[in-house]
Length: 439
Ligand code: ATP
Image (cartoon, rainbow, N blue to C red; front, side):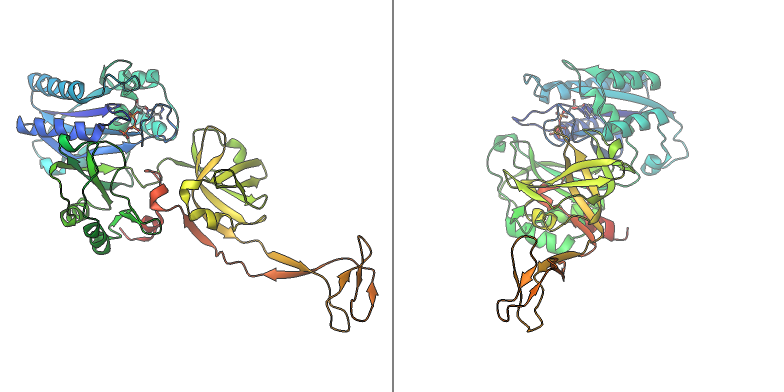
């Protein structure tokens, strides 16, 4: 009889640096050096993008290990808690790490350890809590209650807010999943310019896309695998399988050493944060949705270059935005017109505006130009004054009817999906290329 220990970790970093994935990679390597067996891939779970205290991408991490005795469990626990304490940015006010241990008994005598991952089941209450943490806002008390219900042990550093994410990372169901390989820098290089050979990234992308994706933002001339923060990550490669992210990693060249790498299984790019909803009036702030509606007015541009339109259905309306960082996507969004029927994917922020991640045009409204009528002599008529009809400038003929002629314009937009560029994509947002490929 073995015990499977699920370990969740969150809220260890700050805007000055560090990364929960790095701390996890370090403690996992230490555990392996000690002789512990890790099961499957560690998980990097992205939670509600509107969580108030997030540092960047609201990611939480977990992994599983096997222990044979309580003594081994205590050894592993000490090693993990020491690692988190040593590497976390505890001096930063908003860094409040949390670690969760959840133990399951398992008879592994007839199971190959490599297949063990598929044999594991988590309590429904934990999965529900995790799903809720991806889609809604939860409290430290919610996490404590759930941990109590399933008998998980929680460890809080300072306020210990990290237990929210740590527990969710353990429990998150992964019906769809992607992989990310993270390569870490040596500490000496933290905060310095990353020395990546960009041509090698271009080549890697040509060879491995779409099994890897979001490596580049070609339109913006932007290398998307490279973070722009002082964190320990040199690059992160996202893809469909662990093999393809490994292959892609091996193709990239850099002029600085790599301390270690780790591959995570993740809910990134699965749209798990989005809730399908039938009525606009049921949508609330800090939640993310898929919702259908009619464009209620033509889009307009506001200060800062953000493009705004109103979406409505029978229940109400909501302001939708393509914000400035979405760059070229705004030019597409701007071409929508009143009457278009669309399906929008995105989340509602602080001000109650839905931040559009992608949209599908279901029906295009007809667009018209208006022109003055033609005279029987062939000349285009001119207005004879307000409510006075038209007069021909050539033959002088007058007509009383002052209706204009409607001329249908060819819409350049086509029915179908449109998405933001990789540089503006949320971690959870599913790129269209993932919707298209067979897996
Ligand atoms: P990084 O991505 O660089 O690891 P981060 O953006 O994940 O950083 P954290 O430092 O982990 O940010 O802080 C996020 C905090 O918010 C954590 O304490 C986490 O437990 C908490 N949290 C996560 N999801 C929710 C949620 N749905 N509701 C309330 N709090 C949440």
